[in-house]
Image (tube, rainbow, N blue to C red):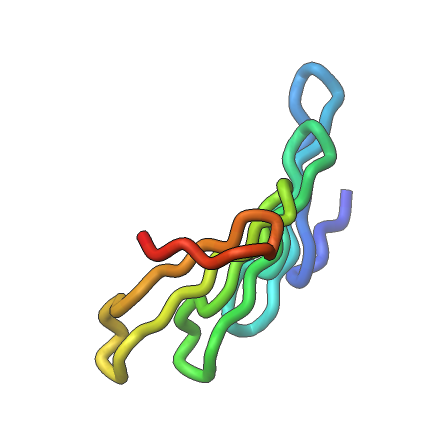
Length: 84
């Protein structure tokens, strides 16, 4: 089986796959065994800036220049922000 460096998948005994998509900055998509997908975005420093989970909830990450996490904001179903 050929696995592309930009995408890979793992097959389990129950014949369900997990899929992983990558860019130069890191993991961009993960699909679980239930075929639900999380998406990820990164800044120029390869720090995660956004995540959209399988429930369509948006999570925003803010970092300083040293890469320290400053804030994490979750929007459930992209309606109202919730600071964590």
